[in-house]
Amino acid sequence: MEKIRTIAIYDVGKTNKKLILFDEQYNIVHEKSIQFPEIKDEDGFVCEDVTALTAWVKNSFAQIQTDPRFEVRAVNFSGYGASFVYLDENKKVIAPLYNYLKPYSPALQKKFYQSYGGESQFSKITASPVLGNLNSGMQLYRLKYEKPELFRQIKYALHLPQYLSYVITSQLYADITSVGCHTNLWNFQQNKYHQWVEKEGVAEKLLPIEKCNSVMDTNGVLAGIGLHDSSSALIPYFTSFNEPFVLISTGTWCISLNPFNHSMLSDYELHEDCLCYLSYEGRPVKASRIFAGYEHEQQVKRLSDFFNQPLTYYTTVEVNIKLLKKQKQASKNLQLMNEGSEPAKSAFGKRKLEDYKNYEEAYHQLIVDIVAQQVRSTNLVLRGMDVKRIFVDGGFSKNPIYMYLMAEAFPAIEVYAASVAQASALGAALVIHQHWNNQPLPSNIIDMKLYSVTHQTSI
View (tube, helix red, strand yellow):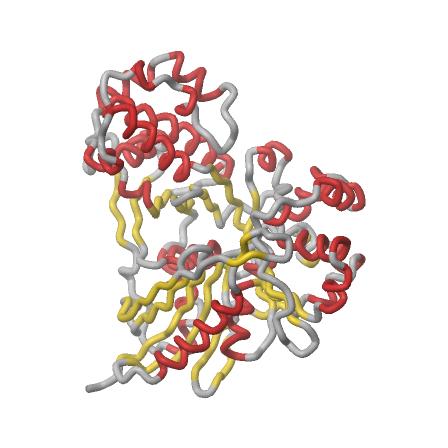
């Protein structure tokens, strides 16, 4: 039997670590997912078990290369951001893979921003809201002042996707999608590292930035250098569409990404949780986000308890257009949407469930409130742009009430529910397509469904 020519992708999220094989038409022909128990760092805070992760990557890659069904021609990597792996001069891991959710010292954070122009100015220059350890450069700054001996021992600081590549290739590189992901490291105005990186002795621990579509020959297998997963997930859309679009990636966070908006972040946008990524081509991608997936999960539990329905009951709720119009027209709803709501939360948490006749009515209101926040968030990255299409992928793309309201909110833009199987993994495969695959790029890698309020084609 002839072996299937494939590319192997390691797609490493905070929870699930996946090994995915795509064939030359970018169909998934093999997929394996694993989870590792978290361990604790020296301060007792939970973190990734980098030793277990490393062993799994090495062992699974060796196994898949001996699988008689597949010819692995290439390998690439997609991983979550804001995470460094630290190596000493012998290229050995010498510190935990610290959790980006670990609290940051307020005093040290204050010292940093006072030294480099203040929060507002610095955040605009680096396109990075003040996020503590979620600004990965701040992790190195913390080590310098809180653990100076460890900081001195660090020879190389690798973002996680590039560490995964190093595990297979033994080659050390940096990549622009990781460096440009709200790290506090990159000066977006001058298109180079911010001056603090050199001044604080961090620059000497960082590696040369290599092009995202570069490959290395590793024992006959072409290996990429890895990408940040959010930037990688945009690549299937870049390869399919030339006209300006916005991608709303919905999960725990709902992130609106506009790869065609290169304007500088304003104070208002930073306050509203906007930031910039860098695309695989090194161009700014303006993004805004709300915590809507998490909120939906919490409020569905609340509805389930109050109305005595199963947790998944919301999946059976059909669109009631009359009810939506009634809820949207109520002036008290409009006031609630705009007053006192945090940027990442809707008004629904303040509502009394006893005000609703049944689960269906309350659930419609929840989605009305979430979409009000979504529209506000998406408008932040749409401003001044002639965008033709909005693509919604992830969980909310399967929610007909959400999709109906989004189509209604943007009548001049085509709003699609889009589905890409393993988007970040697929992006990592597509970015090195020319090196391993002689076939033309397929035209059907994105499944799309247009939502139209006027014709109600999808209701």
